[in-house]
Length: 216
Image 1: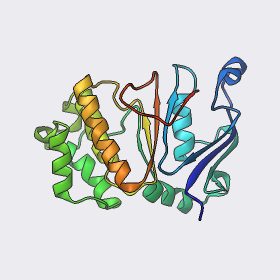
Image 2 (image 1 turned 30 degrees about the vertical axis):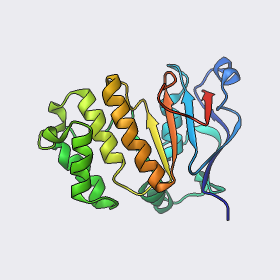
Image 3 (image 1 turned 90 degrees about the horizontal axis):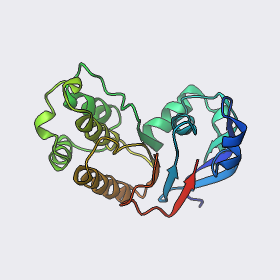
Image 4 (image 1 turned 90 degrees about the vertical axis):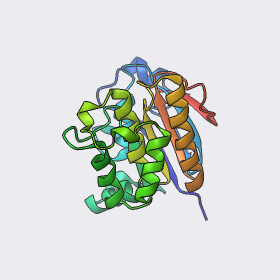
């Protein structure tokens, strides 16, 4: 039986300049990402980093080429197919986090946990204590620092089942200690699931032991 996979087949964003395509190891190539893999994509500003995240998550289609899940093209997915993809197969930490600012940190996490159950409330508490945001759970998300919001978004992403975890600059506002603590939790959770990690950042993450590093 084949391992679950994401395939990128000659993706070209509509807006990207020719010279950036020619330098890329991701755009306009064939790339397969297997469940359990550790992939790092180094993506300088303007290279289409966030666009790639949105394409793999199924949020945009303004590109040529194909994104496939287990050999099935996103272009053939129904809305229900895409909902199932996001509910059970892939989780994401967006660069802009997408928290509900006027809801508590706890509520932001709980929305994900209730919709796509995987962990218990006690596990959420444990994660919040590990990442140093337990005391912030009852505060509105908008009153937390950006670094605290990043840690809340990471905890939220870990509440659902997934085969692939997509991370868009997840540690950009964390100091080294907090970044490494957050990474240890992510690695632990992904190892338990046998899930792949797709880390996309402006530069290589020193404590992330990627099996492959590609340049966007």
